[in-house]
Image 1 (cartoon, rainbow, N blue to C red):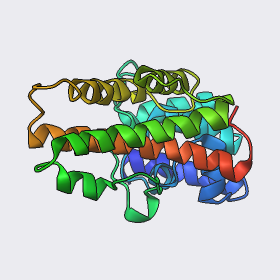
Image 2: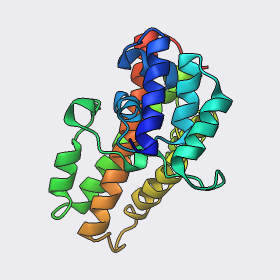
Image 3: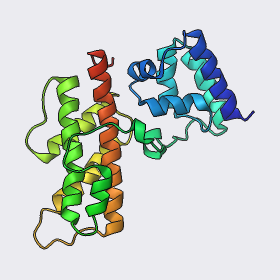
Length: 223
């Protein structure tokens, strides 16, 4: 058994001791998606400390003890910051939330080579829609009409711990490309660049939508 597998085994023991709450319940308690929760218990790779800390709280476990076990399983200094799961994990089709906008991820990728402006617009639209939903559910308001207000919503959600580290930077990157595409005569990104913009935007939108669905299912925001 590897160190990572041993850590996951300990998480499963804590899960059992807490009464085996369902993946959906764990997602609601932690604010992370079901795929992130499942991966943490599977032991294929070590979850980030942010995920483990939320799991500790959700399971009533000793966070300090888990921190020590997590550092030991990682096998490197605690000062090194791992990449957030939401940027590195691969979602299954069943774990991709539905976002009602003009184009799906597949459609946006398909039109990118022939209609780059539409692909960028769709990437921005999914972020805008999810920012509206996020602000309405958790803050009781809606972002202003400026596109920068959408970015500010993601910054606020990251600062408040609703969304994981990195989301504000991603929102800023997509926002920059969205604004840049509005200038007449401005050279548009290459297809390879567009694909990256699209994936970043939709992944962030899915993460935000996960949090919105938790609110809708529980009827309240996370502490």
